[in-house]
Image (tube, rainbow, N blue to C red):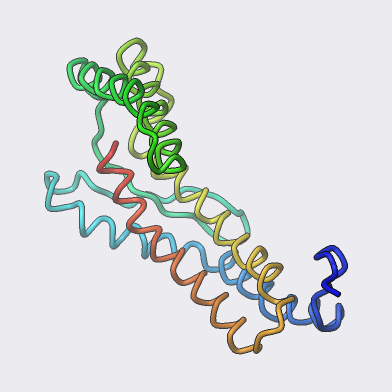
Length: 203
């Protein structure tokens, strides 16, 4: 008799799970909390090296700001920025409006179309904002960089907790669980460089 999944239970001891969680997930969180000054500075340094050739000398700078008082300051990038021109925003608004009219008519790959419609709507709203009230935009490139770094620190702290809750209960080897948690943390930290660069390019 095949029981409903509600009656299925993951094997293993609850106390063993909590012990593994304390020994693996919590230390990874602690690494982020106590070493984020060094991590954020390294990320900003790599991003600075990539962006510096495209700006005049000295315009791309690494700036520090207080974050957690007893640990240290976080690092983020300061660089010149400007709002999109009226023509650029107008062309974008027209393009995204046309896409919003066409995409719902495509009946293939519905999940993908829904995702593209959401993207088109967000970009249309963004274009209209810069057409109508660009000066009310709340931050510049430096503000974006600081907010992004603060967001990433929060993600780095919570990723080990989420991965620990998701991976540790499963009946796989301890080595594989440690590997997936370390790989996820490593990948997310290094992907932050790429995401920061893409954010600056789009901005």
